[in-house]
Length: 53
Image 1: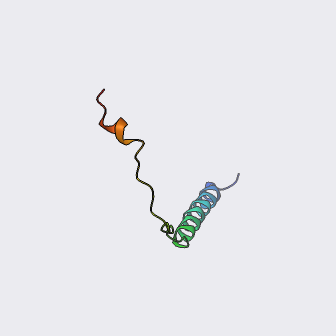
Image 2: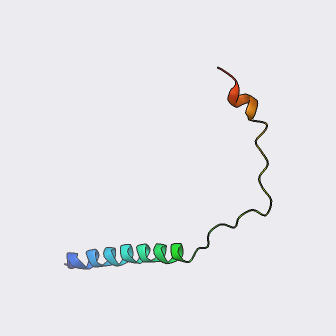
Image 3: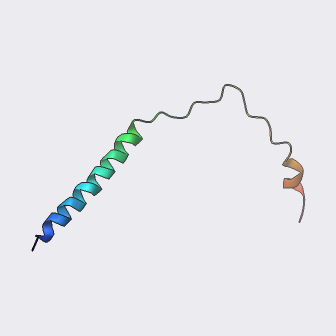
């Protein structure tokens, strides 16, 4: 009969590995680049926002 600690050890290694991989990927990302031109004003939604229901 196999030891129950082997299954726990494998599960812990997988969990710790996934958390470490996620942390490495998160630390390696760059912030999003700011747009070179400004976004247009949302003029099409202005009448809808001021309309009463």
